[in-house]
Length: 371
Image (cartoon, rainbow, N blue to C red; front, side, top):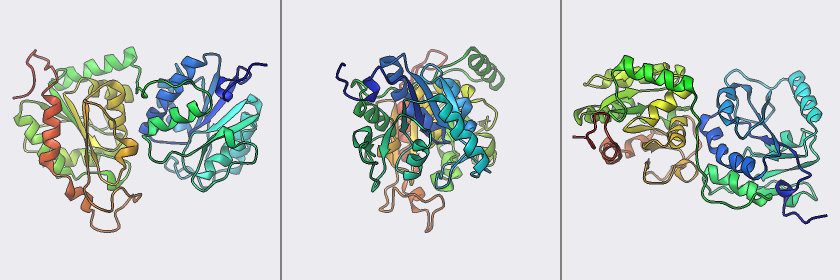
């Protein structure tokens, strides 16, 4: 029998479950480079992504690498969950029965640094169980080689490639973000540009929302940056999800110059196309920053409590403006003190980064840069 270096290199492993259990757009997009590499190396694998059904719109974009979404109903101690979701014993029984019926050869904890995710992974009934080993958690005896101690100080995308390489995936270059477009995305985007009077390369996007208050740089700071970009000759578009209309409206109201408010008005694919054709995105440490990286857009990301080592995208098209306070990064969703990290990131520095990136973007009318 041939010697193999890990289960992902073993031809006897054909059905794989990846337990992600994340609700964030960026979380899933950062998983995709490793999963696509897995598909390229092992096109014979059947890959099931175990995560929340609410992420279906994102998982559909992973169809070239993921064969199915196995809906996760929730479990105790798994903190990432959609609003209103609570663990349900009946749904859990149906979920584990569905997993057992798939007869997985390998189930991998690809969630992160929480033992609760390892318990979910073990409950799938796979022949082999491995993945990330959270801090302070010991893998069951005999499975040590199937686990990788959670690499705390790596970028999120690199963690997943490191895990897969540990389990037999051939090494390759740095992870490459991606987001496939559909004809419907392009049609929506063309209609949006036409209605708003925008041209590719002639507008900047401000994305002031985020999943928690501590990630949100104040609206008046975004407004100041937006006014300066309008003075430079760019149109300004404000974006966000349906639940972020209030913060989007606050930015538009605080601006002296006119802006196009598309908060809650685009689909996921429509937002991706809007970012792709923007001169620059200025936003918080949230899903839009990862979407921008996936479509090759230029982006300036404001990091307040977030960890840029884990989440900032590298390369000449991206800039990270990081809070200069001793308490950052931190895990708080609401600041328990005075939100000093927001004051430490100055609008003039964000504007300088945005201008630097926008100046290298070809304008829709053929001019180079901004005035």
